[in-house]
Length: 442
Image (cartoon, rainbow, N blue to C red; front, side, top):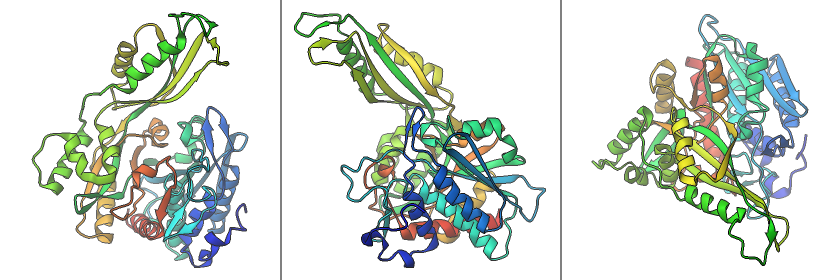
């Protein structure tokens, strides 16, 4: 297994780590970096590790690798009552790249320091992958069964919108999800601090993703000339205009409920969503992005020599819009950048929003309440996206529930795709216990 000869700094307490932390550490040590657009190291080794773990529990494991090294893993655990709809637990095995510059540790060493597990994937989402695996193991090793059939799936390529992962699985292996109506995955169920009180965010929606490329064209020429027809200048003006746009607040059913929950916790009567979100400490930016469209420039490409004016320039923009507003947002973007810059859609997917209601929601809220009594659970709409979007094509309702009780001063949401990604080991153990109890009763 890669990384078995860990450095002394990360292995001093390795044998004393709880199983959920050991599994998460092992998964971090598989570099599954995904740059998108088909450029990725691949998930095969991590998938084989996960498959071997499931097989050791006595489960039949299926692999699906439609593209070399882009491996997906599947198993089904029979429940006590097969007449009930199956529940899907799913995670992804890829991670965004992690250049070592700026990190305090090797991002792929799985180092344990200060009671935390560090490394790329510790937050997104090899922590939840480990929690899923060990929760299943807790039940099966005890000779128990979940209440209903549980389908466990680990996807490739989530960090590229699932184009080479969940989308292909849903299209070519839909039988994996036969009988399932609901799914649980990442980016929900974690705690935040609202003023001096703790609350949990349960994710019941996701903004739509639209990755666009802006293309400006002009006339090539010598860098010393007067040259008004400059593609770089034209592109820069469009990028600046879009990146600085202050998009208006538009609330959905979910964000309205979120604000009601924040108002109850803070005791404030303000009707300003941003002001309420400011009470959520480090999570403020994560929540504010769910109230509006966001258009963030993420890449620029132009030119090939200092004294040559290029004939075209390109920019990448990460656009996230509220469910159902995709076409209107694109029309607004066209108006902002003007007609002399082209828009190319690189990738687009759907937005999701399901009610904060029903038996699964009730059980998730209840089991959190049993493990952390008196702490409220609030619904929220996530600014990013998960593989729940692919499963929605099969009529499956998706939720974000990776339960973590976190320290008040930890900027958990800020570590998604950031440097020094880390998760408290105590939080992993908490999440494992919560998930295990959820499977016992739902």
